[in-house]
Figure 1 (cartoon, rainbow, N blue to C red):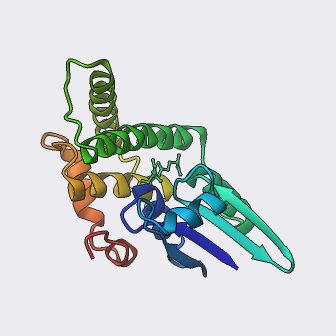
Figure 2 (cartoon, rainbow, N blue to C red):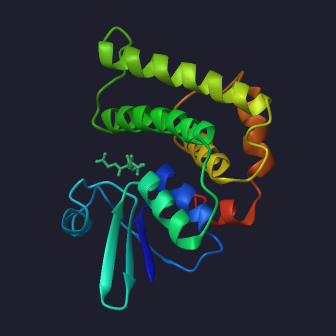
Length: 195
Ligand SMILES: N[C@@H](CCC(=O)N[C@@H](CS)C(=O)NCC(=O)O)C(=O)O
């Protein structure tokens, strides 16, 4: 039995929920910033992040932490195709934006205002801008035309940016078109964080 632990708003969790749409699994929705779910979280995953997976079978149990590790673990277990190195790089780019925006979101939630004169904010802004331009370029080359795992990760990122109003995507026309073209998929609407 596969149990995916996460939250309905996390883009890292959503990519896996979309990818696992046709694979039998349980999903446990944790409120990771609230007690008592933080108590469960610290016991199951001391990094206190989501997603993580617990695979229980006949007396043995394997925990897998981090979305990329879960993807590799399940790809092997379910006999799904491996990613190419270029696709691994696409994931790294998507994760770089995701990570920067998660940190900036948590700072905003903590009442800290983004100030571009401060090194931390300058670095995140530069990274987010550069990577989104690169992803827009890759999309223009047709790299996210197939609905594969990198495309699901990209969709989850773009949709989360829109949902939380984290960045102005105006001008990134390929990314906006990619978002629009995939927004009505069943597994996408079924995992919409706005619901
Ligand atoms: N590298 C991790 C990143 C996961 C991550 O940052 N998850 C966020 C939710 S979107 C989280 O759990 N944050 C909790 C925290 O930073 O305290 C992965 O790919 O799974």
